[in-house]
Amino acid sequence: MNIHEYQAKQIFAKYGVATPRGIIANTPEQAARNAEELGGDVWVVKAQIHAGGRGLGGGVKLARSKDEVKQLANEILGMNLVTHQTGPEGKLVQKVYIEEGADIVDELYLGIVLDRAKEMPVIMASTEGGMEIEKVAEESPDKIIKIAVDPAIGFQGFHGRELVFGLGITDKKEQSKFIKLASALYTLYLENDAEMIEINPLIKTASGDFLALDGKMSFDDSALGRHQDIEDMRDISEEDADEREASQYGLSYVSLDGEIGCMVNGAGLAMGTMDTINYMGGTPANFLDVGGSANAQTVAKGFEIILKNPRVKAIFVNIFGGIVRCDRIANGILEATKLTDVNVPVIVRLDGTNAGEAAEILKAANIPNIIVADDLGDGAAKAVAAAKQA
Ligand code: ADP
Ligand code: MG
Image (cartoon, rainbow, N blue to C red; front, side, top):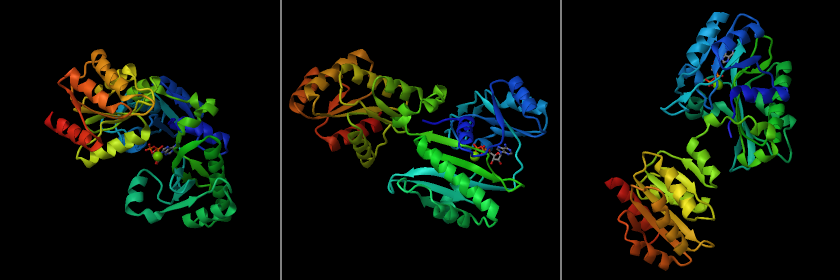
């Protein structure tokens, strides 16, 4: 689950990670009142969407008067903000964060992500903070320091020293401030079951203090049960409506940008199915795990959700009958085609218990757009061919 910048900054504050002061607004009038309340003479109006790159997309603007704050908030609220992370369709801005303008001497980068291969959180830091860290990662990866911190040991002094020496921070006071901040961020990461924290930029001010100017965080969905305060930060309007609907029916659905809809039982088989489609020269339109209880209702719902995506040209149903028997799934598929209008070819590969009976049932039904496949390779090849023909 992702949260907004202003919410990440609320969490930062609890752990002593300093940020500029700011107040959230839904209207231009509120934005102007926030500027008044914050005081000072420079403010930043920041679009709150679940995506980075807002600055380059025109969603972060500097204002030098309260009228300008109001005017910029008016422009940014309701705008469809397109950034390199939103995709071409962009995201609607519903809230703006009004923040005091910070006095930037230096822009650094500091983040923590889970490295699954190392099985540890990795702290990443760079002197090349600012808006184009992705470019730095691609063109000069040596400018990003990466330090894996074993949770069994925790953040230690040597981790901190590696960071400050790597960043070339030589002033003793600044070194200790930075180490304290990185250590706090690590604690925050672990205590909240975060998956990713990114501060870009982390700035150094004229007084040698470090401030988180931006904040991005995502959390492990499976751990939200023990973090009601974070669950409360959920913004449904930022989430994919189809993915949400699917989860209400116990389906794990992730929308992708290919052409072949996939309906599979089990996450591992779903991954393998997507790989096989790719191998056969096609592209999957989604990941969909119908789970252990593939029945007519879940299959029908699966078809419905897959077909909401206009790019889908064929559907590949790849289900292994273990506890659920294939004949029941075959009947479920036939039943589902009556419940939902399926207007693309459906390639069905059923294997496992009673696979033979299942194939007979499907063939006997003689529905023109249901094509029975013999095995995974055959099914993927038929799905790719059907999508290419469409
Ligand atoms: P994004 O990463 O989505 O583009 P940021 O919050 O990083 O959004 O803002 C983009 C840029 O705007 C920052 O790199 C910084 O230069 C500037 N900026 C953001 N917040 C402030 C602030 N409070 N004071 C001064 N400049 C800011
Ligand atoms: Mg940023």
